[in-house]
Image (cartoon, rainbow, N blue to C red; front, side):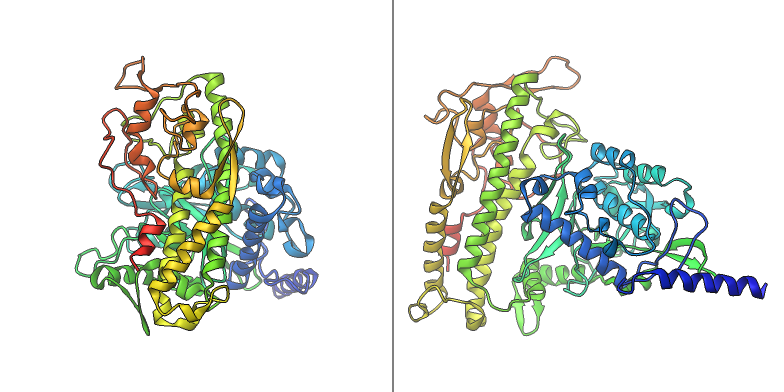
Length: 582
């Protein structure tokens, strides 16, 4: 027995010695069962390595060539320029070979925001020889697990309990959905949940952590020097695209802790989270005996914390968040303050950067609008998801979900208002700490206070918005120029209805000169079990969709068309008017 134990130890040392010296997490375990061989444990060093992998994917998706920016899941995992795991130095030794194409291929067909998070993490775990698992869940209130008030973990699917990697990938990715995130930190069986909330610091908010909204999840993939967060995101549309254009505008919907309530963390599952990484229990020789979830205590290494819900409780009670020596206006300002590496802000650079991002978003939108218009012309009008309990204008498994731009348009509006919030915050900081605001492009001698800065910044924004432009293709195939200032004026008029011609999709009103020659397409609506749809005329549908065009975040409630109001719909105050309040 002693000889056997000694031979196992020597074999373990041999495995370590064959590893590359610069591996941040050299192999330390081995397994004789499971969907793939295990070589490493998840630890802080491993997560930082994973973080670099995610950040590189984001960089290529955001800043790479045209093909890289358009890359879908297959290309993300098979193109060496995008996937660092195809680099022998990065993937390390030992590692598991590239996953077969017949496993990668089906991932594309089912991809959405939740499944993207699992597809990437399961793939990375396989290549590096790490344990991986997901929870099985049930609805806590009997409703759809993606929209329920809370869910309950009932068990788990572990790579260690499977014998075939292909089947594990298929089962885990298809089983997982955004409902897996709807588990409060003190909820029933929360100890076997997939994720935990984390502290809002640069130390723990690394690329690869997650942000869960209500029914939607994104992968944090980049943090700018000013504390601006950027995400990888996926769509349920037929194109199954992977996007990079969200930012702080998507950080909404956190429920505060309620100390006075009996269940003080009820509903506190939205927010910044990290995987509850599994841990392999081994014998003295490093042989894996079983795989289990980490406890909350064990997850402190990765940043487990409830502070974001406590900060929101403070905001609800006091109207501000206390962060010595300042009183901060809200969660966004707290994040910028904590996550920034550059302690000064240049308003001009902010406006330039946001303007460029908006133009890029709108250029991408034009390609989508053209595809949707061709789809409608070839295959007929697309029914509006009227009063559906399982679908709405933002999320649908039907043709509407594939070709409506409702969710993209929300992101564009959110991006615009994120710039407004940034400038608002910068002006506020001008009095708190004048040296934190860089005014190298302007004469500081004429800026005596916030009002002066607000006037100069507004003038500069209008100048930049008038200089930057793009072209959309109208229904006749002609290019129409729109400046960013034009699109700012049309922000609440950009139609998301795929039945509408491009002119309406780009904010021309139905009776305007710009839309005069555009084909008139009705929007079908099915009422109850009636097999024959009611056709809503184009101009009426445009008017009744105004409410959804006013929103800056996605809704989870049912959507309506026929009975919607056409006037009196509140909209957010635009940049110039808002900043003028200073």
